Length: 279
Image (cartoon, rainbow, N blue to C red; front, side, top):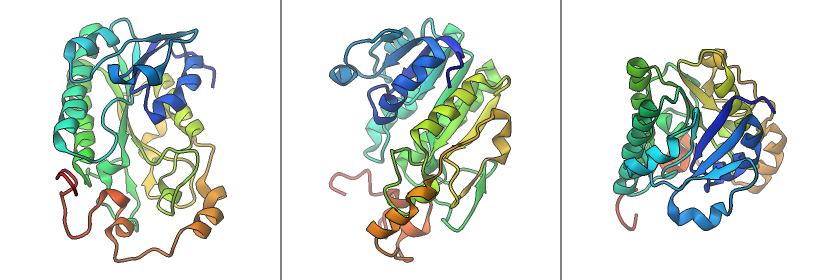
């Protein structure tokens, strides 16, 4: 999708898996793609290529985030902790970092942000349920709570300051589904790119929640409340179903990872222990 949406587009978390997958794709949608991540990822990012800028920033450091945001017209925010773990790093990167990003956006006049939220905001809904964008959050982890916070913070910045945000509840974005759960949550890299471009280019975004999944036959998510975004997935996990079934065992229906949409982010019998050392 070669439509150019903005002159300078900032992508945080550029050294991560999704950042790496979107780096070449998003360059066609702007004049300059500004890549940002922590200083520790400098080697992973490598050198700036034509049409790129690199501005290293720790999300927990407000002045560094402001420098990364200045001069951009829109942000694709992949930055932060992407898995469950101890609370302190999540607090710094996903909660304080989210505040720093939106304050920088407010100060520098950024009008649109695509926020990589997560399916773990709703991970305690059951796999037998289909939920809409209007269902209330049911986070399955401290990580999921941090993403729910980000959705609420972005809502306040839209209501108060008019910064439009798409909260994209990304399912499982990998080259192909890894297990049976991902037959419902899988999002191809190409569909992720289509979704980001739709969020950046739709005439009126407002504050929107969008489930980031491909056109999978098995589906827990109803995106009808986000039709105004214009996202039409073109890929499907269905082509991988036979191979996934062949390499995975029959599910244990007593396992919380099978009962709930959050999958492995749930811990049977010992809830809220993922933050404890050694768990």
